[in-house]
Figure 1 (cartoon, rainbow, N blue to C red):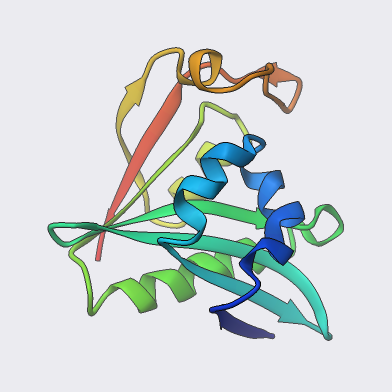
Figure 2 (figure 1 turned 180 degrees about the horizontal axis):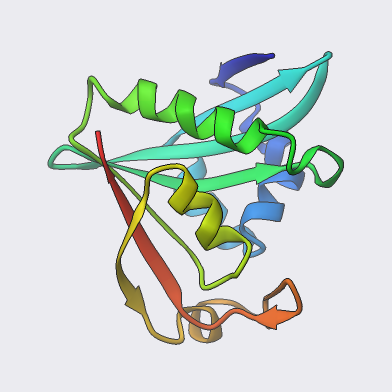
Length: 148
C-alpha cells in the first residue's frame, strides 16, 4: 500500500472524489486549495482524500472516497490515519463534515472523531438533487472533530 500526495492533474481524481461528494461545484471549491492524497494498493487506486488548512490550527477533511469494490477493506481507515499523521505537526484539530448516514458516522467514530454540531437541512439546500445513502435521504450535515 502506498499513499501519494497529488500536486498536479487533480481533476483526474474527480470521478472518485464524486463518490465522497456528489456536488462537483463544492469539490471545485476545495480541490485546488487543499492537499490531495491517493492511496494505491497492488497498483490500483483505492482511496482519495482532500484535506484543507482552515487556519487557527484547524485542518478539515473535505472528502474521503474509496472505490466501491475496495470498501470495507481498511483503505479508508488507512487514509484517515495518514491524514492524522500529516496534520499532527501542522494543526491542533482535524474536523470534517459529513451526511447523517448510518454508514458514515460509525466509521468516523471508529477513527476517533466526535460529533460537535449539525447544520440542519444542509443537503436539502446545497445540493441540486436528493442524496441517498444506505436507503436514507441525507438532510443534515454533521460536523465531527478529532484532537491531534
